[in-house]
Length: 367
Image (cartoon, rainbow, N blue to C red):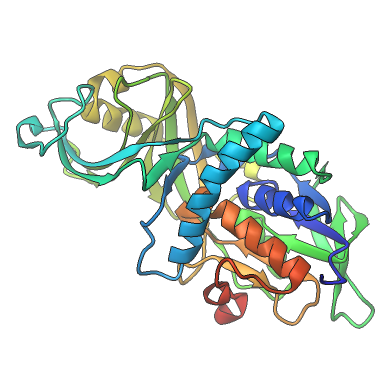
């Protein structure tokens, strides 16, 4: 065991931070999570919660995704049995669809066509079955992973991480500053999503950017639950690519309208762009009039963390002992949270990981 793993501070209470805390706590490591606004308060709580086994095939993320997909099923079973935690995990079938506001496409559907889809919607293909795609409630999953971490001894501290503290020679971290107070640790992990860019002021890290997305949650429970990935022709000629994910709690999630808007300093200040909610409602109506007519329970916006090469940053911070980073997962943060947490815990405790190869995600590659 790495002798420097006696206390770890995880900066960030999103899905990545919660999963790291869980796997550290399970291994008996004293773990403190520092979170500014609330667990799952940013993109982790506003994502679709869609999971796919093999949609990253042919990329360096493939092994991470496959391992994490398996861990999702394992966690859903074991933590429900051991701790009574449930976040609406279920395997689900997934369809690729086309929809059009100006045209009727129903007659060109191929194979299965759920009754709740509108006449302007055609099914292209089944792109996932219950062996390869699944879904969950992302807010509940992140909350439950944090609760599980706490059940194994982790602590959650509310506050803003303002910097890192260092040994006298500057070669090693000794903790973090939280609201002006020094909090000692043997290791720290930066898992602040797009706000990990703030840590570039303290540590030699590549820049992380925020990709803004919008979503609605509607009170709609289809008789036949399918996750949908759509290509949608709007009346104004624009092509949109929304995603629709029904959930076990009787709601349905729809997202789209991504853009590179400026990242607010505080996650609490994230707001929807003007007209975004109305446009998402119009997309929902085109796909399914029943869905579009449903009550809107939430209008949401969030920023997903991305890097310049599209791959996450997972590993040691170059040149600084005891400093680690796990961020930049883009749209696959919810999927890859468990395997990232498992690998980071192994890296910190054992000095290496055997479940996935972290070399493609080494922060050094972008410095």
